[in-house]
Amino acid sequence: VSPRSQQQQEQEDVLAPGVPGAKFIQLQVLFVLVFVVPLIAVAAPFLFMGNPETLSDDQAAIFGLVIIGSYGLFLVCMFVYTIISYIYLYRGWLCIQGLPGVQSTPGKAIGMLFVPFYNIYWIFIAFSGWAKDYNRFCTERGVNYFPRANEGLFMAFCVCAIVFPIITPFLHLACMSQMCKAINFTTGNPSK
View 1 (cartoon, rainbow, N blue to C red):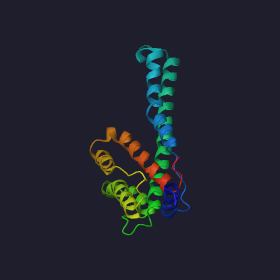
View 2 (view 1 turned 90 degrees about the vertical axis):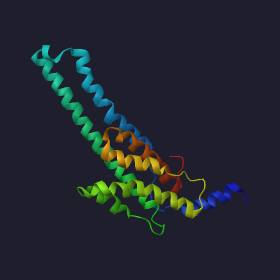
View 3 (view 1 turned 120 degrees about the vertical axis):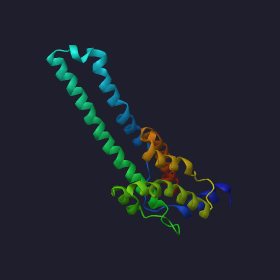
View 4 (view 1 turned 90 degrees about the horizontal axis):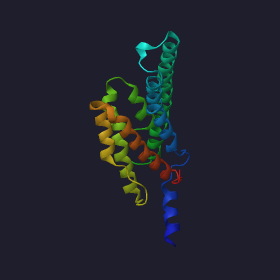
């Protein structure tokens, strides 16, 4: 038996049947739309129209519409980004459900994030707990070629989400990158 066919057999043994893969490019595009495009839209009127206090009424109206439009774009993109992130978090938990002693179910991992105040505790289970369980899943299944989740990164995301939220989006994107890779390896689509 060649090493490649043995690796393929190992992967077939640990696959999460019926779980769709994850496309990290979706999150990257939305991340840029959420954080870069609104900044450009807000800065553009200042660059092209000058001081807002010296604008004519028509220019001020356009200036206001651009700012309102960029805020609307921000809200829509942030909503879509959050939904896709929760879908991938759900899939991440779904991929490791065959593991004995897993900390959560996919539905519970997402649902408890919507409970006020309890979500401050639950974010540690939903994200950092997933990283620990996923790494344990890889170890117990003996799958050495699967990428491991950086538990420290997931813990840093959870802590910063509560204490220092300004860098949370960047840590979240890094965590979701690792989660997407893990989902794609466990579903048999490591090239996505």
